[in-house]
Length: 296
Image 1 (cartoon, rainbow, N blue to C red):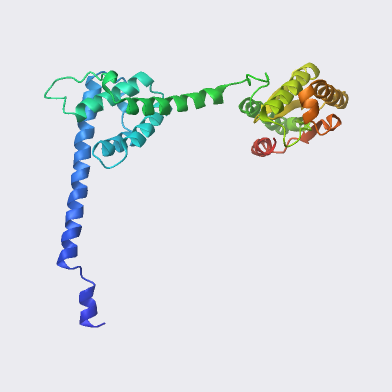
Image 2 (cartoon, one colour):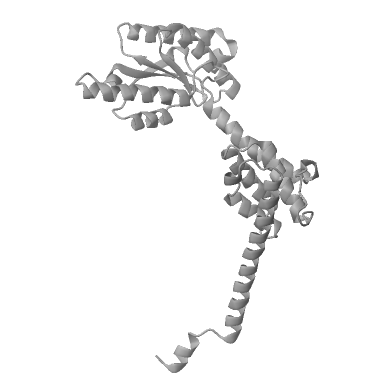
């Protein structure tokens, strides 16, 4: 290697100076964030924050960076609202904590003076973004915990997964005792409605409601009746005598209900094509959950 090539590998004084300046700026940003974060935490704890151990999160750092001009503040408070809700922290505490930061960032904390966290002084956009983000997470949790679909009266897919888990737990016990697998005694019946692709969402939902009503009247001996997504009713049932007849009877009744409704009669390709498909349960619970995901 020529000496000139070796020398070209070394940074110039100008490059070295730029790198040093960048490192100095980065250090300065970290220090400013640390100082703001410390003032915010101290003020919010003094104002009555009830969860000292749960205050720190990545959303806090992102909000601090946004206040210091490094990020978009509305996006940062959205993340903070989501994380507060996920941690089980109430909306009132979340907004008052943000109001404390707002006061601190305006220099309203001097000496030992307390910052009250007055939410009415928060900019409306920040309050709105934080509250909506918090509410979205809570609403999602509530939906996931619902047991019954409000429109059809059928249980939710989450409930069916729990019921299947119970079945497979029984399976494990049967295998240990050398008995027939409990899962082999069950099957899923999945309803297929013969609605055309042009059928509107409302008409399709009404078809599912009619089918659900029939299922409740035919399978009324402890079977689990559930709705997958918004268009596929299913029945988790033991394999027992008379099941084939009940399945055929349900198909006929659903077809009659569809023909009796003028809008659904027009939407049907053929009411005679109503089917309750028989699906045997896979050997493993995880595979059964994958099966549910493919239906509908």
